[in-house]
Amino acid sequence: MGFEQELKVYAQEKKDICISNDTISDELFKEYGVNRGLRDLNGKGVLTGLTNISKIVSFKNVDGERVPCDGELWYRGYNIKTLVKGIKDKGFGFESTAYLLLFGELPNDEELKEFSSIIGRCRNLPTNFTRDVIMKAPSKDIMNSMTRSILTLASYDDYTNLNDIDNCIKQCIQLISTFPMLAVYGYHAYNHYENDDSMYIHRPVPSLSTAENLLLMLRPDRKYTQTEAKVLDVALMLHMEHGGGNNSTFTTRVVTSSGSDTYSSIAAAMSSLKGPKHGGANIKVVEMIRDIKEHVSDWEDKDELKSYLAKILSGQAFDKKGLIYGMGHAVYSLSDPREQIFKGYVERLSAEKNREKDMILYKNIEQLAPELIAQKRHIFKGVSPNVDFYSGFVYDMLDIPTELYTPIFAIARIVGWSAHRIEELVGMNKIIRPAYMSVMEERE
Image (cartoon, rainbow, N blue to C red):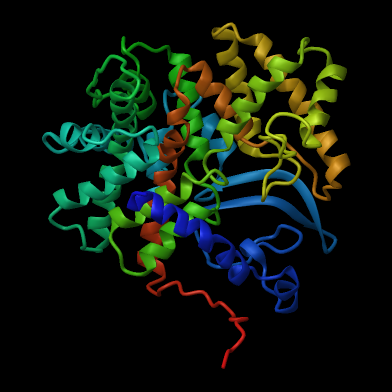
């Protein structure tokens, strides 16, 4: 037996011991009033900080009672619906929204032009970085590839550990600019070396938007339509920031509070986001839809579809976990505003791509699934589709490989992470150190 196998057997032998000694009963959590996952029994989060960056609204006080309401998402005092509507006929919104989240104010035309120019000029990597780092050890896990690249970029920065605000802003802008390159080049390296496909590295065009460059770098012919770029741009805007209480943003603030550098903080956030409970939900939606298509003959037959959704919900179909993916959210109650905004753009893209039949299926699931879930789970706050319900469908229509679904989330969310890192450095200046109560039994 080789050592690797010996170590594997040893770990298997110790597994039960770990489970026995590390299990803490639900009763102890109740006894000491400790909320698992920082969520109470009603799903409300434990307050762990203050922020001026974004806000989520899912309940409102009516005559002293907490009543579920349609969801709202606010960036720096602006409703996300207003922001998306504002760029409807003005090109692309990623850059202006990034400026808003980083600096707290919407840019005027001159400020946006300057910021967009800086973003464009920052879309470059150190000499031979693509060859020596990204292509050196290609991986199907693009999130891991990106995280390795982020940490390696620190070695090219003479001021990595300088946490002055201006230096932090500079580092964040550079990472926001290069994230699309790290993601797309990481995928091309994997696709070439592991899938034996053609290799091509397209240079980004400084004058184009982030969404346009993403599609340009990804596609062999560098071509895309304005509708495609516009829908991807809106997707990036909607995923850019979400209230500060999500796992990866909290991770950014925890690591930042220790005095660590920008690269380490963002790499830690990447490690959080790649978890399937956080950033990979849209992949599960796509897999579920694929399964439904195989088992439901008529997608417009709501009775047949409802019957199969009931089987999924009861754990008899798909992955047997009893979940209809893309439905419900830890925070929102009656509706997810991102999904409501996104749906209209998805319809436009599905028409351009001749995917109206798929759109009918999605709409029927959107109508039927909440009713089934509410009945079976006795959900008190209501159930509605979340943004992940449609985002996977959009990426599929854009011919984006599933390996890039979560990295695209990261390309958007790094803006929010950067804003929270800056706010943590400016306004907190105190290490985040939560308390854990020991329930260990003392031994003689």
